[in-house]
Image 1 (cartoon, rainbow, N blue to C red):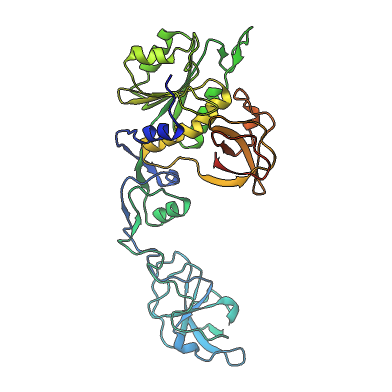
Image 2: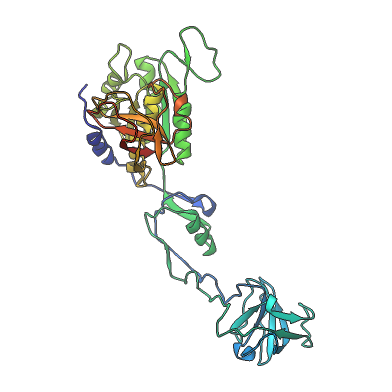
Amino acid sequence: MAFISVEDALKIIESARCPDRTEQVSVFDCCGRTAAEEIVSAVDQPPFDRSPLDGFAFRSADVAGACKERPARLQQVGYVPAGCGETFSVGPGQCVRIMTGGRIPADCDAVVGIEDAAYADACDCDGAAEVLIFKAVGHHQNYVFAGEDFLKGAVLCRKGQRIDAALAGCLSAAGVTEVTVCARPAVYVLSTGSEICRPGECLSEGKIYDSNAVYLTSRLKELGFFCEAGWAADDAAQLKDAILSRLEQYPLILTTGGVSVGDLDLMPEVMAELGAEVLFHGVSLKPGSPLMLAKLGGSYILCLSGNPYAAAATFELFARPLLSALTGEDFRMKALCAPLAEDFPKTSPGPRYVRANLKDGKLYVPQSHSSGQLLTLSGCDHLLKIPAGSKPLPAGTVVEAYRI
């Protein structure tokens, strides 16, 4: 096994490509996805001049100098609730009662809040109601213009832009019901090993329940990918069948176990017999150094260690960049620097990635962090990088970490 550096492995991963595919999703489901095309608004938003508050609309000249002691007296000639399509002609000395979101009549150029007016009947439209306005408002005061948010023809979303909740809301406000987004490849998770039992099976002597399939499919679903899981024993024929039967449906296959150099570590042999192109096998890091990436047909096969934490750590470090390369989206972890809260007592000849929890600006490392332990990863939100050649690190040492 020829080990390469983490950086060289990531460079190979970044060159991975998947055929460009798109799909249509509801505007309700587009948040977090990447737009596959430019989206231009077909309407002004809002589509008409509207009131931002409950009150009265009128000509601002009619209330010039109005105050509590000398209110302006206007005649109410209409009532405009939100959604009203009726038009009103408002002359000098007249007004309409208007609700938030109501369309401001063309003759009006200002709105006053209801708290600055006195009136007898809010919905009296017979022309007899007198309204007292106790506040002067200027031209276009309390006035929302048509297109104030965005205009017809405005580019709402660029191709390749990640859609957040605010943008999804804008698309809906523009009347968009479906969005063309970059398709995400389906992922198959194959957990291997004659010693593992699926959840629900009888646990016989020498067997352990599998956690890798559940962990990896859970993480993939959290990232927004469709995935399925399967299991296979340490048997070359069974492994080959499990992989070959999924190649057409799954552009990415993740395997756990059987990737090192033991007697029953069969994944390297299986890749060779299938004629897969092995892009690398062995990365200088701890845990998960037997990592292997291969390509077979149009699919990529990323083989992770079978140890639960090693599988989890290498998924975060390598599978997420691979998902980024295959989709054009960014699923990579974000880096930060923070001090250790406590001493880290181990030496690290090669780069080591340790689970950690960031609290009050400091990184806390669980006491137990074996590659076979998964429970101590629960509640941790970062992978802490210990550089190659490090001696035990005292508390306060500033280290690089990546948010899971």
